Length: 136
Image (tube, rainbow, N blue to C red; front, side, top):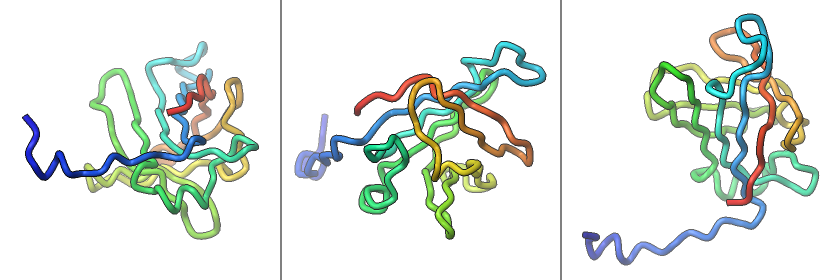
């Protein structure tokens, strides 16, 4: 049952270029075929070139989220953050004590199926393949 306060909350309409992006671990030592069980789901606006749109991110940053998934861990939910100098990172503020996971030149990457992006986790760079990009 919803409360009166919840019933009065206006629905948020996200811009049409908001996307749900699924990244899966590409092949690397320890995962010669890659891994669909290791990855991220990112919710972010993309521009016409398929890059993260920093202007729309700024206007809707509370909705720009990331979910890190691993087979033997609870999902980690955080925010997509825009760092000084224009780089992007994942910040897991819900748990509160994890370091940011910076992307390697994510500001220049196109988020299209088949493309690759790199993310630093625990001081080690990992490559992920863009598996899907879906309109929200």
